[in-house]
Each structure stands twice: as C-alpha cells, then as structure tokens.
Length: 360
Ligand SMILES: NC(=O)c1ccc[n+]([C@@H]2O[C@H](COP(=O)([O-])OP(=O)(O)OC[C@H]3O[C@@H](n4cnc5c(N)ncnc54)[C@H](OP(=O)(O)O)[C@@H]3O)[C@@H](O)[C@H]2O)c1
Image 1 (tube, rainbow, N blue to C red):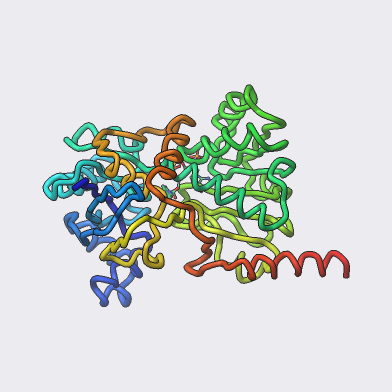
Image 2: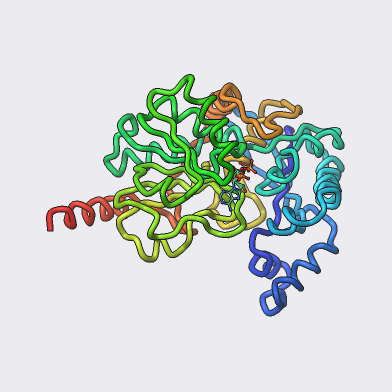
C-alpha cells in the first residue's frame, strides 16, 4: 500500500481547538494559543479509500501540528521548525513515505527545505498542484461569468509568494494585463521583470491592494496574511475572485455586501475512490485541498521523494501535477465559497443582477 501523511494545524485557534476541547470556545484566544504551544504533534486520523482510476490505492494519516498561523509566523523559527519536524517524525513512525506540509507549515521559513533535511521521508508543500487548480478554478469561474480570460484584466495578490508568483507567471503568458500585487515594491518589480520576457501583454505592479485589483476581471489572491485583505469596496462589479489563502484573504463582508461578484475557494479537488478522511476539515465527503491531493498523487506514484520545496514553484512541476491528476482521476470540483457550494444557478443569478443593473 502506498502511504502518505499530511500535516494540518488549527487556522482559527478557538474554533479548531474546540473540536477537541469544547471549553476552548469560552477561553480567550491567547489562552488557547498558550495551551496549543505546550502540546505535541499527534496523529488525528487514518485516511482510507484513496483509489486511483488506474486501480492503485493509497492510505494516509492527518498529523496535527498544534500551532495557529499567528504562532507559526511569530514564534522563534527554531521552535516552529522543531514542532513541524516532530510532526514529520510522527508521520515516519506511521510508515508514511511522503509528507505534505499543510497551510502555514509550508509558508514558514524556507518553505519546507529545512524540514525535509531533518526527515527521512519525502516532503512536499503541495504548492505545484495548488497553482494548477487555482488557475483552472479562476479561469472556469471567469468563463461561467461570461468573461473571456484571453481579454481579461488579471490581478494576483501575494504575487511575490511561492504560489502567487507562479500563478502570475503562467497567467501573464495568456492575459493582456496582469497586475502583481504585494507589499514589497522591489520584489514585485523583480518578479515583473522576469515575467515580462514571456508575457502576452502588460505586466504591472502595485503595493496598494485597492488600486491593484479595482479594475481586475479575474483575481487570484494567495497571501500569507493572518487577516482578510480584500474588502467589499476593492472590487469592480462582475469580478471573479479565487481565494487560495488559508486563512482566507477575502473578508466575509464581501459575500454579505456584494451580490455582483463571484468569490470562490481555490484548490478544492474531488479525490477518486471511496475516500474517508476520518476528520472533518470543513469540506463535503470526498473533497480535499489541492496541496493534500499533491501528496496523495505522489503516494499513488510511489514517489517517496522531496517534491515542491522552497519558495519557487516551477511551471514544469505545475504541469507534471496536472498530468498526474489526469492519470489518477483527481478533478477540480464544483465551486465553494465560505463553507458553501456555489451551484450554477447562483452564478446565473449574479450574472442576471449585473445585466439588470446595467440596463436600469
Ligand atoms: N488552498 C490550498 O490548497 C493551499 C495550499 C497551500 C497553501 N495555501 C495557502 O496559500 C497562502 C500562501 O502560501 P505561499 O506558500 O505562497 O506563501 P508565501 O510564499 O509566504 O507567500 C505569501 C505572499 O503573501 C504576501 N503577504 C503576506 N502578508 C501580506 C499582507 N498582509 N498583505 C499583502 N500581502 C501579504 C507576501 O508578500 P511579501 O513579499 O510582502 O511578504 C507573499 O507575496 C497561505 O495562506 C497558505 O495557507 C493554500
């Protein structure tokens, strides 16, 4: 049997810790975080039923690393590395051949390189397949909103990051205008210079989120910000936003106050086979994040090697994960937004509202 493990961590200290310790709901967040810091990583569920369309099967485990995004970013890096490596050792002891680093466990430090060096099994951030599905989701969302991606104005928020940079690089080869949005002007300009060489049109930069995305038809947002960065007033009517970040970049107020934009989660994948994750991470049965899926794909291939590591995701790796996904039957699933499915009727309703208002 092909074996993998995937590290997850609480995204919202109180909500996620309360699943295991209900009292956490009533405690101040700092107290919950203090408690989490004292805990050791442990296996929280056995994942069964991953079955490729080729007939190959895989099994795995979720291993919890008890630190929140804020703790992962603000505690001393050595302490954080030790915790993640300890989670990796749990995966090794279970017999996993490849380990996926979930959410902020791949954002911290050097993007998994140090962690991989301390473990005897393969390690991946899952960011290659995350890039592939983010683009596929954003383009499909645009198509359903009657936007032609080949004529659309595109923005990538977090465009100097591991996932964001490669999304921007690939999209700049197709779209007439791509705006790279981030906080560091120098790094943005450096990335833009690289992408301009192969770009189909203009590649612009902005350190102001509102200015950078206010004219965009398609936005992929993938920052490592701890709080939301996209607010209702930032978006033009009819925009499609694919939010890949965990925690989310798009404020809940956007879906509450803007009924004329489409916000979808990036990287939601239907896993082949009668998969049982043994743990509720907020998706309907059979669905997983793209980064989890990349780990499963490597296990199905028996590729117990380091895969996507560091802060650069190559286009070649993105394409390879797409090929492996097709081979094993992993597919981008229907759209989701803030824990709910977005059926085609909801998208049709957004389109009609926009048309009605335009003619009123
Ligand atoms: N959905 C999935 O399957 C999946 C899979 C993997 C990761 N993720 C999520 O994807 C996100 C990014 O991961 P990554 O590995 O690409 O991280 P990364 O390499 O650290 O890049 C993060 C980017 O966000 C920018 N940023 C950070 N804080 C910001 C803020 N307050 N405002 C604006 N920009 C900000 C950084 O810009 P600076 O240059 O200014 O620092 C950088 O460009 C994380 O939320 C992670 O949990 C999701």
